[in-house]
Amino acid sequence: MNLYPRLPFILRLATVVACVVLFVLLLERDHLVKTLERREATALKRAREESFLGVYFGDQRIGYVKNRLEPARPDGYLLHEDAFLRLNILGENHPLRMRIVAGIDNAYLLRHFDFTLDSPFSHMTAKGEVEGSTVRLALTTGKETTHDTIHLARPPYLATNIRAYLLAGKPRKGDKIRVPSFDPVTLSGSDTVLEYQGLDKVLVLGRIYNFHHFVENFAGLKVSSWLDDGGKVVKEESPSGFVFIAEPEFQATDLGTTPGRELLSAVSIPIKGTMPDPERATVTRYRLTLPEGGEFDLDGDRQSLTGNVLTVRREVLPPADAAPCPGPEADLVSTPYVQAKNPAISKLAAKLVADTPGALARVRLLCGWVYDHIEKRPVLGLPDALSTLESRRGDCNEHAALLAALARSVGIPCRIVAGVVQMGGAFYYHAWNEVCLNGKWLSLDATRNQIPADLSHLKFVQGETEAMVKISGLIGSLKIEVLGEGEKK
Image (cartoon, rainbow, N blue to C red; front, side):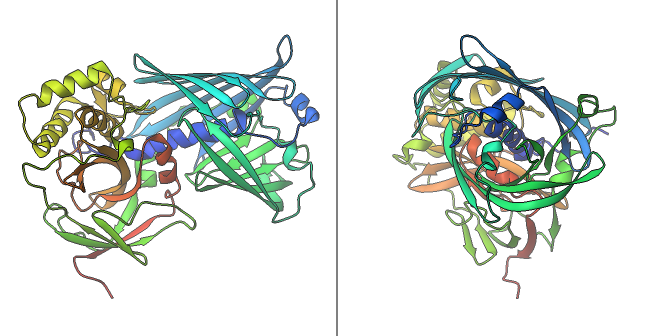
């Protein structure tokens, strides 16, 4: 049975890109450009040996990570990291490959890195050179290369899967360590906080060991890591369901022939209560159960949050002569993943709206064009507008990136948002857009050609790639009860 015609708007949705981004960031945060406070020569020496981590989703191995650190002349080391991930989406296996080659000097300072992410319909590379606390990047998506310069507070160090520096000070239970970091995929810097939980019994390779347990607050998510007495990571677990476990090569790379759990159904949220017709209702209320400590964009524009009850109101369309908002600038600019100033994007947008007066009519036209011309299918990778325009394929993430670029190129502020949408008896993770007209934000969904988006669209985050990580924190924790059009006592 072909599911694609029945599920045109949930193919991969925000879930897969969130998982891909989280998977990449989990690896990079350990192996790329984290700032270290200690210089552990012993730890670095031990890390030269080749090591493997099996990657699990639930209880099934779906990939592996291979690490190797070797001396490099005249002074320093090279880290080689290869990762493979196989995701089951709607019954089809989709491979994802990642490779990092990073150079560090004898003081463990990062000197350069070369990062590649590949899937059947997506390819991107990020290369960087580091001088002091300045990172100069070249990011290539599709056929376009974007250059950028990032200024950090301090020179970045490189950490490996040996983290003896966390144990060097003999931490006590409850001790916290703050670690500033920079990520070349989201092109952003952030701080993570690790809290020592003491010794913990963990089952690894059929035996129970006492390992040092750290919980890391990473981009609003809590990631658990377990280290042996030498500081080597033996297990790591993310809230999205990804688990990394140290294993021998033959075991880590044995993925078998049985597909892993189907990702979309595994992370969908069952609907509790009776859902009103989302396309006709003017207001709908939901009771939410959210993960502790999560930071979400729930209260604003058409949504209002009181306690744990979210009220969503259908927007009134602005008049035909509505004008684009003069800002905010962040939702008008061209970015590495929303290339509004690329000639292919800007020429197409200008051509499409040339004979269409009025911002609302232009928004309708651009949304309809994306809906009609982009084949709806999964594309594993980091969604960007230019690649989507070239390939003419993608799911909600690619639709949202392309629509944002087209709208921005003709002066209409447009942002990407993500959350969940109802389909059948469940909510699925999804991405769509908002445009600003006459001083108000208006929702629209190019994968369903809806303006405004129906009231089953519940927004949790807004932004580009870095915002997708927050969505992962909802997986396994979010519960939704439909209260209907009236408050439920």
